[in-house]
Length: 339
Image (tube, rainbow, N blue to C red; front, side, top):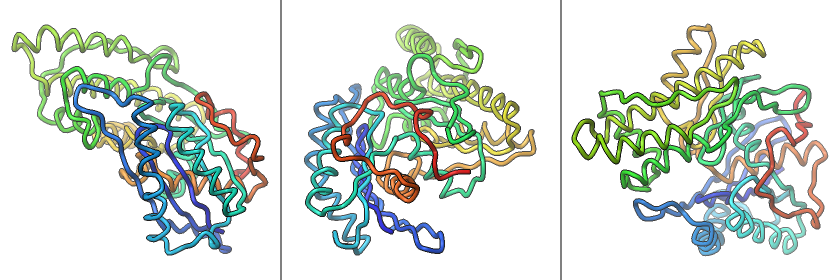
């Protein structure tokens, strides 16, 4: 079976084509992405991002189908991101998925964005039953599978870790290309002076808004006085927020008696986060799984793959229910394809 997946929940528009063979193999036939980047010092606005998606989605779809060497007749199902995400971009992408479903007379499946990240990560890395750290611009969750659900053991109580990094990048006017988080990571490598920041772990949950306020104060005062560098602040921010994530992940590992960790989501590309997590996992005689930016960052292949898993196990979205929702929790989805 072959699925085409449409992802557009934030500033990345992705179209992926995945094949599931009869013998259980998963073949990634295409995974094309186009990113909307706002000017330095600015975030991406829903209206502008939705317009970007509308402008590029047909070209990206044609490129994906050409790379996969498929036509509409070869495609068995259409999958799209139902949520969570930003309203305008979600709807712009879903409209195309719905239209193609009608034009091509194909079943359609609405996919939870978070579940898409997890299932793509599991497929690419071959992790068996990991504790999942899902970190992105919109989400921060520590997750483990149990009884047909991905259970959330800890999460942010305010802003996501990626949002914290992105907003600090805007404060110090770092470029949004290729991404604010990537540019913070490169700056942090040049930093050496640790500026003390709040360490906000509350039980199993984390909080980043106070950290952002504190480091903005450093940027407005100590940085301007020459008491620290921009690189020092990036270094301090990364070390603090990543230590919090490692702590809550380790506690979840102990709770569910797991020795595997899988990092998914756009922030999962960060090599410093992977390095810190690897150090913790090794102390527990465990194994860390992570992917590169092809699959960590939002992409259409993860939606196509998860859509196929759902469809093969009895899930198809009635056309009247092919709406989008900005609030769609990871633990709302029945994971029918896992034992």
